[in-house]
Each structure stands twice: as structure tokens, then as C-alpha cells.
Length: 277
Image (cartoon, rainbow, N blue to C red):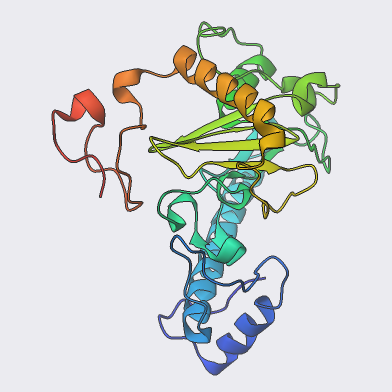
């Protein structure tokens, strides 16, 4: 649903539209998160939602112009369109406005890290199909190379795997069992279809969520002794993966990420300069 204004100050009509949006279940009004939540006052919510949906509307219009140009040039059916994002967005979820940097220390809620992945190429890629498997942006390069029948000289060296069979309307048996890894400064995560484990270097707080029973990540089980074996195994997989694929001197585990942005090279490459603000 578009917001019709881009002005800094919302009109009465704009506020009425925003009030309707705020009734959506996708925009919950929850108490501020204890580690840095959003301002739940009506005025601030109006400002936040207005800005967010204005940006979404502008993006939608721009994508529409690109698609129309491809159609006008007669190459729409010869062009693969891939739409994805670099992060999720909390608009009140967990009492946060923002992504992983909506709290300090950083968070790894699904609403912060899950992103859309939409692929379109009429008459080549099946339309209207939704796949519920787990995939990562690490999979993007091997998938596109595989789908276009190009070789991948980095196969086996870099993380990620091809799910090109999904684009070919074929079965992809491994999609439900893939493990997704993530890093945001000193915060690392491992997630599969059933569990999510978040480890914060060096002292925590750490998190464990049973996603199959608790998809909204409300009940942190990290202190429950009955799940110690699960934590141990997930921690082992997490460490193994980062030992295999990360470069220690460029890692984020010793970075004091505050959430505003990176201003210089990290670790050894930064030569002592501040990396994050």
C-alpha cells in the first residue's frame, strides 16, 4: 500500500492512512526491546512508518520502470530478474525499529536477517511458485552460475551451494536441511529449520530458540539444561564453519559494532584505526 507523500511532516490524511497500516499484524506495537527498542509514541511511529513505506513505494515504482523498459526493448523474456535484500527490517517486531543494529548488542531475530528472494524470467522460470526451504545469500553465485551452465572455479572453496533445480521446477532435497550462518560484528548465528543459536563474543548474552515450536523467537532456552547437548552441537558446527571459511584477521568477533556503520578496514587491515561508529 503506497504512502502518497514524501514530505517530512505528515498531513492529517497521511496519518489516517498510517493509522490503518499500524493495524496490520505485520506492524506490531510491542514494548521497547530492553537492549534498545523503538519509540512507541504515536508521533514517532507515524514518522517511522511513513518513511519506511515511502521508500518501499519509491522502490516499487523504480522497479516497475526497469521492467517496462525491458518489455519495450523486447528482451523481458531473455532477462533474469533477481530481487533480494541485504537485511530484514523490524517495524515494531520485538519492540525494535531497524535491523540487527536496532539493538546493542546486535540481534539476529528472523525479522532482522530474513530477506526476500524473488526470481523472474517469463517462460523460463516457473511463475507463482513459493519455496519454503532455507537458503543463504552465499548460495546466490553458485546458483546463477549453475542455472546459466557456467563453470564455478570456486566450487568447494567458498560457502554456498546451487539451488538452480528450484528454478528449473525440479526437486531440491537439501533445501530443508541447509544451515544458515551469519555474522554481525561480535555476534554469530547458526540456524536450521528447527533451531537457532546465537553466540555473542566474548561473554554473551547467548540465545537458543526452538523455531519449530517458537517461530517468533519469544522463549530463549539457552539456560535450560535439557538443551545443553543441542547447544554444544550447534556451537561445534558454528565454530567449524567459521574456521573453514572466515579469515581470522578480518573477522568481526573483536569489533565493537555500535550499529551506525563501518568507517575503515577491520582488524589487522585497519592498523589500529577505529573500524565502526
